[in-house]
Image (cartoon, rainbow, N blue to C red):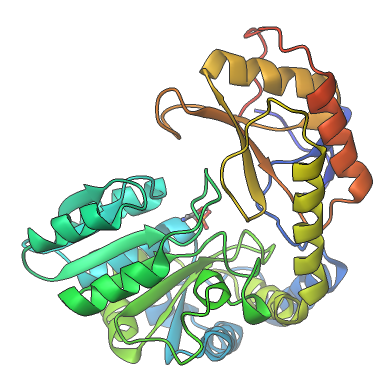
Length: 376
Ligand SMILES: *Cc1c(COP(=O)(O)O)cnc(C)c1O
């Protein structure tokens, strides 16, 4: 483990060295934002630290309620429900809405938490080839019981976006739930940061009842926790039944105060969303020939390497040059698809991007597997 000695940011002190980082999910640079820090401090002064109990016991406080209300209003849905982590939110949504005898139809490249959630739910898990809607349709035709389509909005290791319009059409046709985990879309894009569905113009006329969205607060929001947002009925089911909601301590109310401050910034952060887009464009322009990017319009810009030893060697060389770019290897990604997962933040400057593209240009990619940097 590398040990950070300064707050999360595009420049971090790590094990006694200053590193320029291209690995966090803090896409808007809010993790150490002064207004959010102040909100957390004020929240702790007013509400203490621990919530002391689960939400349904006596751990649900006014800031939790206000945040759930604000998130629902922002996303124009009936309700939202707070969770301590995105992992737990996913366990709740899948396990709360389907079970034994039902079927989850899921993209093969879904985040590990969605895979685990499907397995733990007891429903039959049918996985379709990444983004392949013909395959998804085949799996739906074989499905029994209640059907659920389950997908990342933005895929966490590839940066591409799910074919959400087609998935919505399939959900309607097959009377299925559509669960979109937009951990990497919320805040990052869409009108007022409303995520991938908004970016693609799919919820301009309203959010359909079959659509349940999951968002995490530890990424673009810069705080911690997660939410599920949707129509009253499914959200109420989760509140009553989901074990990862019922049997865990509520997040600290001060954290909800901090996230309310973050949400206010996210909604109006048109400038920050323009910044990461500009930095991504600079990154793509500045890359040396021969370096292959994956097809992504998001802040996740993986450099495909293939061989895992080579990916580690590149990452090590970049670390030597003062840049923290993690090598992502199997089992996080498929065999032969190792990559450098470059993530770009609104907090990066053009000079930061130039530093990275220069380092990638200047590297002689010798293999040195003795010092593998850990993935972020
Ligand atoms: C990070 C992530 C999660 C987990 O969220 P945490 O709040 O970190 O537990 C879930 N889904 C996706 C797609 C993610 O990228």
